[in-house]
Length: 492
Image (cartoon, rainbow, N blue to C red; front, side):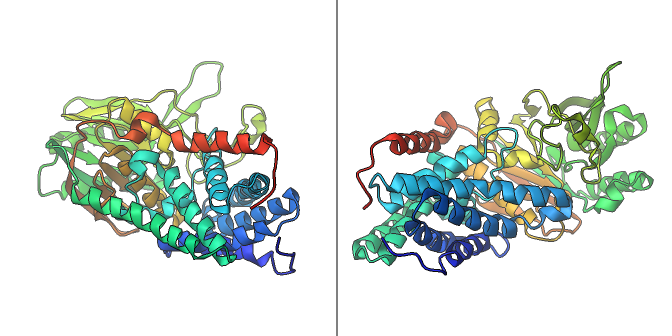
């Protein structure tokens, strides 16, 4: 084993910074194939699992600290709690990698199996947070992500980490065979992706959409004095449409009030819908209040039909921890008094999934963060969705990297399920994405825009991922646990 040196701690920090650069901005996604090499070199010289945990945690602190700096722009407390918490997962990776390596499993396999298992675990539960999964770094490279229709995004993570592991073995002098294997491991999935794109098939049924990006500033949006301004702006942008469409989409909280409870503003949207003679989906807030109970506030999406008004409402199920709901508020009620963001804050999770229907289109209204969870979107597709709609208000994040990171994650949902995506954001990025992850049209951030285009509706069979879900990461969980409890013959 290579001896300990005083500069070993610099390696995990370097890895964290390199991996952060693979995500927008600047979005040098190919950097992900080498970013983890310094970390793996440090873990190879770790003498104990505690030392390995330390290097993993240090990597995580550098990576998440840079990747998620924009969280402080939303809620500073969330940033200073989230980064140390999320860093526990790379720390656990270091410790478990150290243990699995003692079984004699090669670096590349140990790293890929343990990393993929922990990415899955990090995305589970009420504190689930999938932001920063390595596979997302490739989201804007359509030819490199087509494996996701088989493995999901965490299969891409497995692939990237395995390449890092092979290159680490080569850097340690294990022979040029590792370099050749790494080259082949990059080349074959890329060639597969090119083949898939060259033979891409789309359904015959299509839907024409208009995405309205109102670009309403947060300080304006949540100031009651400017409520009329918000509605007027969306009405004017929508009225600028020069062609008929099948569905108009406004973003999350485009109607920044309790729209269904305030007759004046509900009639305002009904009038817009009637004049267009077109269905309109908008984000808004809603509440339920029973006598003797605390009011429940929801982050919602409502579908309006011409001359019928609001016909269906969906309440966001997967809320952002610290951003939309304080964790453990049921156990510690005083947490509900902590003000979150600039809106109603401390939302109640919705109780059920549902699909909206417009013509032949059946789609969920994925609200903001929900598009980041592959397993949740997969359930909607299995329920019968043939189109994905994502509405979001990324103005919270400011003119930084988060809107691009968020959009990049949503792209992977199309590839996993071979389904089109319409994404409408208050300040961008709004975009139309085909079933192969190709962005057909997209807006700039913090500009007024109306994006019009057609998307194919999903037809045909489910993808392997849609049918079997997270089969690969769960297999990695089982392998990791199995390897950790078996006898340790030594390290290779």
